[in-house]
Image (tube, rainbow, N blue to C red):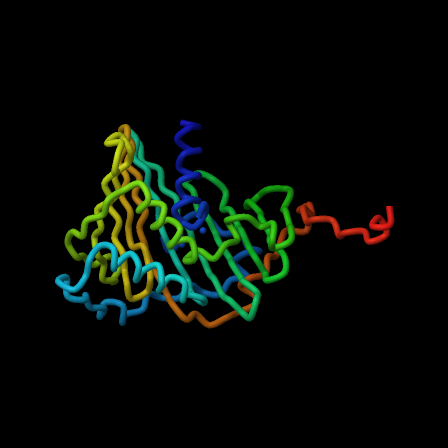
Length: 267
């Protein structure tokens, strides 16, 4: 069980934005967090009006390229995703809610990770500092944004990296078109090039917003499914959303890089 929990967490972090990270009331949110985060955006009704480009004019390669390019344009949005892992008769579920805003050279990120039976994990980049805190813990960690790691990276910015990694070891084929979470999606089947034992992937891509709508991986009795629950572009910026209010008794450990001592340069 512990190993499967670990695999779930790793998978959730990877698929929601790491190496590459959002149910309405999944898990419990701390009072401190509730006060600082505005209501989630509702799913945009206009998304259901998305249309497909004629399949005759699209290829798997052109769709991947279009999604990569469009994902880089997402600079202010809300994203809610779910990762489900099935192993034998057990299913573990993780959900991630992400807010991102770019202002000049500053990136603002708020990521909340909900795992069944585990405390909510918060990763917050306020444009200056990167914060990490698990609900109920006695300590929180803060560091320079440059040392915040992948959890502080722009979630949509990792989509291109993931797709390029898939392309390196797989061939691609355009399958059917579908609608997922109100978004038009193209199904791309990724088949391993050399080693049939490698993981085959079914990926569903949305060109309009540069999104991965769904991914399905099956290997060695494990099935892992990443899927979009909600996406809202052009969310109104709120600085309070990217602040973290900790309980008074929480110890803050500063992991920032020490400032360079210029006096030592003379030695």
